[in-house]
Image (cartoon, rainbow, N blue to C red; front, top):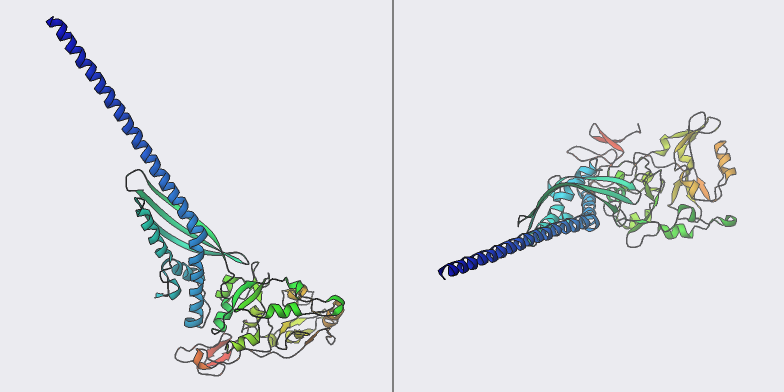
Length: 421
């Protein structure tokens, strides 16, 4: 009997231990699975956080911050320099990241820098029990096409889960296309700080501006395009013109991504612009290039005779009296005896200039163009302006750090016209 009781007791203990082991194993297995599920969920959370971060930087944040940085560059051009910005990319980089230019805070960037944006991202990460640290190595600019600038942000990202699930350290490059429309044009900003000129793409192509059916020379679309509404300036893409970024640097050379507008002198006058010349081409990259002095240039006709370029600065029938255009707003070609301009811009704008009249011009006969009148000597350089706006005109004193107008150099404390190289 005693033996049976002992056996029964031993069996009960063994069964109890077996049940306990099973419970411990099952609970341990579920703990492992729970922990694994939690880690997988945390990693998914980190993945989604990074994906949302990349999308937001690319689609929204970079666009908004870039627009403000360009506005800050315009303010700098209008109020602080009197000269173009040769290090555009470097100044943009600093403005974009921390909102300063030459060590001073730029008002358009207050609470709107990339650092400010990253602080909001950090607080958002904390709400998910994540820590994020982003270090921007550089911000670069590239003109990708006439109407867009590529803004590329290179950064190092350290994302850590506070629950210990994972830590990621990675390098990331995000490239965003930023539209230049609705931004201000640097040529207008620097040369006429009182004038607002907002870039808009022209609703017309160049060859649509003039209707020359039956030689009617209808310029109504041209005039409509010239009119400013809400400070809008219509621009055209042109391989002969400088790009948007080149304009900040005062580079008047041609670019595959070039843009240009026609300068409305009456609009400039009404806006209080002090730098107005009525004897220059109305194409902006020629008009605002004060170094460009047409009276100094000559080209060769097919008989190797000199043709002064100023003879081709023309008024156009059915357009305002102030509107002028160089007959040769394009590159030059060599016809065997020297550089001769090609039609360029006027290939696309039919101003009723016939092949026959063009041939007469190249033969050095008296030019006779239907719809245009040419030959008035242009102004020899940029007009003088009052000293109060920071510019010093020809013959005026340039001591004490007062800058000469673009196109003039300081010689014996007097501003004199600078000849083209």
